[in-house]
Figure (cartoon, helix red, strand yellow):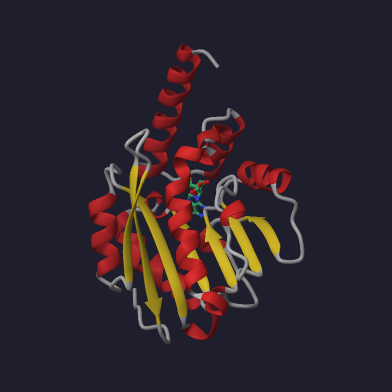
Length: 216
Ligand SMILES: C[S@@+](CC[C@H](N)C(=O)[O-])C[C@H]1O[C@@H](n2cnc3c(N)ncnc32)[C@H](O)[C@@H]1O
């Protein structure tokens, strides 16, 4: 791809992302963006630091992180880094195009499924031990975040488990997002992840939820 093409792609991605962040978060807009290749960078090496931190947090929980729901899984960038203790992984995304790419890249199997669904509509029979919001929570209006957290708590197995959130340090919504999360829970772990080449950095936090302690 030429430099001009790459610059044009960045502009189009930023415009679409801005509308999804601050206007109406639209699945079809995400579909277009994915099919035009705007988000291929999510699978790049430079994005891996946050996946490594999330994978490490999951690994440290051992058998208590055997089942994981990845909300807004995108093209499944977390999948190759999942530790061996995760035996059931479900990736959901509001974009059916993202899910199509996931299924092409990572064959679904008994322990790994991908589903095109917005988080608000997602239903499951068996709860999860860990729920991941990797670079996605800020696509909700910030006032809705306590309700989203509450919904995540209700999807945890027996009302207990881990919620893991990553947020880009340069996101315009990072402060209100962390503030809203803090209204319902405090982190058990809080770590930085940095890519020294691009200067991109993220905060990744893990919240230990016991007996659906969070409201919303
Ligand atoms: C910046 S991408 C991050 C993708 C992936 N988590 C990663 O880290 O590579 C945000 C993703 O969240 C998805 N998304 C946005 N709002 C959503 C919602 N309400 N429910 C499910 N997925 C959503 C988008 O379609 C997009 O794939």
